Amino acid sequence: AQSVTQLGSHVSVSEGALVLLRCNYSSSVPPYLFWYVQYPNQGLQLLLKYTSAATLVKGINGFEAEFKKSETSFHLTKPSAHMSDAAEYFCAVSWNSGGYQKVTFGIGTKLQVIP
Amino acid sequence: DAGVIQSPRHEVTEMGQEVTLRCKPISGHDYLFWYRQTMMRGLELLIYFNNNVPIDDSGMPEDRFSAKMPNASFSTLKIQPSEPRDSAVYFCASSLDAGDNEQFFGPGTRLTVL
Image (cartoon, rainbow over the protein chains, first blue to last red):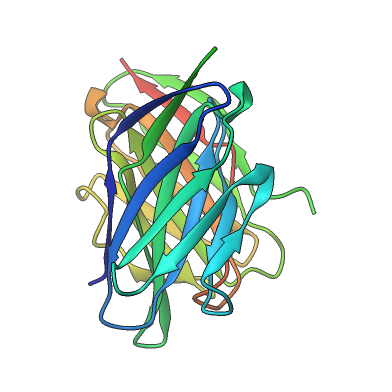
């Protein structure tokens, strides 16, 4: 089975500082990779996804992620944190197996933005 | 489309009672997923359906949990009897039939079992 590992369940950054949330995956087949964001008391929503079209993926709200096959990583970055970025972020991997879609989510990283 | 709809949004019940959570996926989506989210265990996949057929229920905690999808526009997750450790937020999500398609999540049902 494929898996994702998110390093750091809690990350704190100052407003205006770089945001870096780490995700490593293990996959024996070409993966599809996703970052989702969850704001308090809401469901998850898609930030961005990698589907092999381009290794650098740009998402909503100024976030981007780079797929690095050699490092099996898909880290999420944003140059300058905003207070509204405070949320929980989930990395996920999806793949086809036996004709069906399968997906696994990471444990999530809570981002705190300090004024 | 209104997105994935879940009801109720909040449920408070007493231990031993039956609880039924409901989900309406986005029209045209082939996959439907049920998740449970707790502080201790994070986001857990309970079961998912493809074209109304259960594909993988290995995440269902025990026989007290059951899920059905009688048609393409409706699914239920039932807990009978409920226990305090079932307290969590339960999410329903749906997606199109392809590995590179995102899941669309509902707002969740916050279940509290006293």
